[in-house]
Image (cartoon, rainbow, N blue to C red; front, side, top):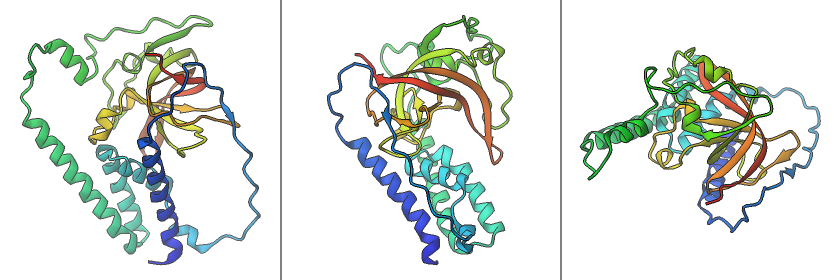
Length: 280
């Protein structure tokens, strides 16, 4: 493999490693006051260069996202993306890179199989005093028959709810198109959500992150469903620091099925106006 071909992948794995190390650092005591968004220094202007033939072997956006999910241990999310990358590399006859992707695919498959076996060995309702109805609600979204529709948004309203309440519907992430009308009506309204941050660009001076209900399931290779994931964008020219604890995010909600290379990558997005630690 050529050196120029290795550089993008090395940079990607270093970035994932830095985020992991940052996430494991004990959080500093932060007062529950609103955290101002820090100004991001302007990026230096790169000099114009001639097209480089090595760019053809640079990782695509879907490959970068696949490796991000793989690095986080999100095997279920990484597997279909890695298979798409595998097919693309084979079509481009990049045999030297296909082998590494195929090994990552095998790692995903082994971990998913192990998780399935572990789950099958647990007897449902084994916990003493467990409420079956509460357990059913926790394990999956409400069905079309028992979900509670959202009330229409009011002008100037900032609605506060949980992420799972927002995405309180069954959703086919492969086919899409089944977002309830009452959920679509919330697009453009103000909203306040609590959750946990997963940086999507870098560990410091974060400009984009995913907000999820819990980090516990992510650690065991079971990422949250797409209707329980909010892609949060920080205003242009500003950034936030990484918070390992629960946070409260306020801003403008957008409901829109976004696709990348045929895959639905997001359903809810948010332009944030405030990011602060959750008050316990």
